[in-house]
Length: 226
Picture 1 (cartoon, rainbow, N blue to C red):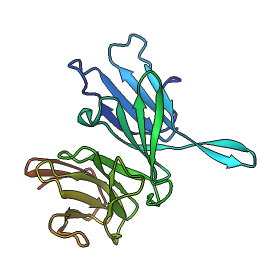
Picture 2 (cartoon, rainbow, N blue to C red; picture 1 turned 180 degrees about the horizontal axis):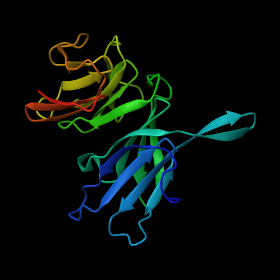
Picture 3 (cartoon, rainbow, N blue to C red; picture 1 turned 90 degrees about the vertical axis):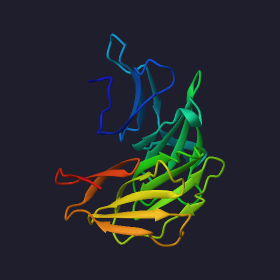
């Protein structure tokens, strides 16, 4: 317990490099990313990274811890690259080489979310592009730029989760706290929702899409298959 996270764990991802399938990575609002190996006899993290930001105070710098709320790992984008969404609305990119360090910060100058990032997904067809979901909007980013390249208009209700279509690169899905599912298709139109559907009277909390099926969870514990 003393070696693990000290706040709720908000996201976990399996590390798919190699064929062992024994390693995963987790993030929490305690400001740490922890790497785990099921083969470890001690049941403790094998590596860790503190998410901190240096704030200038006079002639010195003060360290502020950033809480982690979302993770994205995709070996196709780089076996040592990790994307982290934070409680403060920024996106970080960390590299795990001989040392683990944050090498890129997205949204620090402009374009950050106004609240925690709840979903962070790389595009399955073009992995250097990724989607972030938080506050009332979702944003599309490119690894080569620090500001978003696209952003949805602000929705009328808070967004809770989102994911890309596995078959159509410009299509993604967003769940809302008022029970609606929104479908955006940037190949169809970029400033309006392509399709919107009422799913539940309760807040929607999660979505997972596989081929032509979507599973959507709500705050009452119901899963709807569409």
